[in-house]
Amino acid sequence: MALNFIDLFAGCGGLSEGFLAAGNYNALAHVEWELPMVDTLRNRLSKRWGHSIEDARRRVVRFDVQRTTELLEGNWSEDSKKLYLKDNDETVSINGLDSIINGENVDLIIGGPPCQAYSLAGRAQDPFSMKKDYRNFLFESFVKIVDHYKPKIFVFENVTGLLSACPGDVPIRQRIFDAFDKIGYQILPPKELKKAIYCSVDFDTPQLRNRVIIFGVRKDGNIALDQLYLSLDKQKQETHLTVKDAIADMPKFRLLPNPIKQGRGNVSHELIGDKIIPLHVARYHSSRDVSVFKEWLSKNMNHASTEERLAYYTKITGIKSNHIKYRALEWDKPSPTVVSHLYKDGLMFIHPDIEQLRSITIREAALLQSFPMDFEFLGSNAYCFKMIGNAVPVSFAKHIALAISDILQ
Image (cartoon, rainbow, N blue to C red; front, side):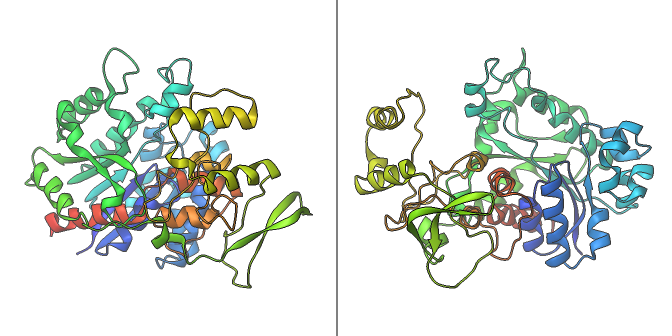
């Protein structure tokens, strides 16, 4: 019998894709508020997972999870209708998420609230260390929905910065523990959450991406929390995939002698050969970018000291920075963490082939996140990079799903 789940903060569907790919899972509903992600997930459910367009639109709810009561019970306010009604089945606004679940048993709730407020990088760049960021408390909506449906298990995925985030007098990890404890769920105690840090590279993903995986189980249930972590540990792979495994076979590009105008933008590179892969398009790079890529790769500057790399950026731009701004991928290693910053530029994701002198494409970023080649991302190029960078790697999600099913079955 298939295990039913709800995906909250679903994004473009990395977690859902992994659970569905694991088999023996049925997605009852997905909740996400950014429209390109919603469109992408609906499209995937229809084209890959056998849902009609109408059913995919019904199951993927575009709504702000913070409006939790409206989400669950319906009777949307006029403000909510104005914002979201046109993008949803009207019955959702009347009867809420409950109308989609329709009395079905909810075995799992999965999701990861937006991580920017917990990330070390985000805190470093915010004058208030993100202590005033509303996203610090989005976990409260997750808790309310868990309390409403009472699943056997939940999976709460987030960045490791969650373990040190303290937007008030109480650390976030303690707030999360107390909130779930209050509604009858057991998670690892705050001091033991370091045990819940996993790296995606151990789970068939060609990327170093550390994440906290918080499993929760009902106190009145018969599932042992430690068994879930032991089951996930057993899913770890001894050999690791590399950048070469993921993108070495992708069609190559060459630098044009001079950039050309194409549509609304400029083009600096052209595809070699006639094999067209959707979203495998080289982004425009200025002559300065190209010269940086060439020097960086030829001198193997990834392995220069921090001081040398910072000085190099100052030499190129005339600007001093406390952060490394350039980095190349390396064929024989996993990729560093794929981040949503890619929507701004690709200077931290220089392609390792010195013959191409470019940053990675949208499709290559998706492959490093272990999305299948046939996964379609809908939206602007910037939004595609953003949704890929924010996603849970599909293979990582699949192994989490397999670990859970091994226990429940």
